[in-house]
Structure formats: structure tokens, C-alpha cells
Image (cartoon, rainbow, N blue to C red; front, side):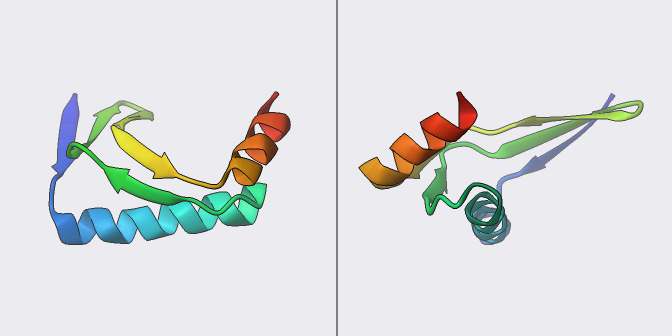
Length: 71
């Protein structure tokens, strides 16, 4: 199993923006992400396993919308 750790603040910043933009486009929810630990990606054959430890800041309205859409 191969493993990649992304600990660079610069790369994590880019990934933060990409993920936040994708969530906004897909779910209509604006959020601010901060990663607490390095992002770990493990490759096992045809699968990629991604481990994220992050905090997300969003408004109460967006949280309600997110919960409603996911439930």
C-alpha cells in the first residue's frame, strides 16, 4: 500500500480552496476549512483512502441547509 502525506501549508491552502469551492457548488453551502493535521492519502489497488482532520466554519443557516440536504 502506497501512502502520501500532504503537510505543506501552501498545498493544504490550495486543497482547502478546492474543497470549499466544490462544496459550495454541489451543496450551496459556504464554509471556511482549516486542516489540523497533514492530509494522508493511501492507495490500495483501485481504491484511494483519504484521511482528513479539519475544522469547518459556516453560518447557522448553512449548517441547517447542509443537515437538511444530507438527511
